[in-house]
Length: 82
Image (cartoon, rainbow, N blue to C red; front, side, top):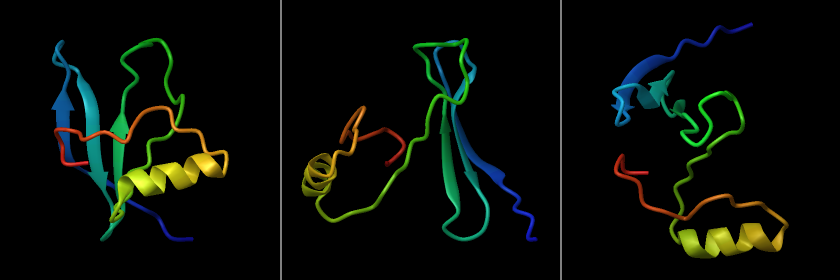
């Protein structure tokens, strides 16, 4: 079984100086953005954020909704180029 190691690439602090976003990377194209839920500081692991690269984000979003996909937020541009 292969062991995966992820290293911190970038981190972004919140207003209180605590990390709110951590970009970690394993091998090529193994990137994870770990984002805290700032609305509820008592709960960890409430969900997953998946970032995709597509040519037309609005049509991709519309298609997900047609197949009963649940979009909690977005599409939205982020300051970290996602």
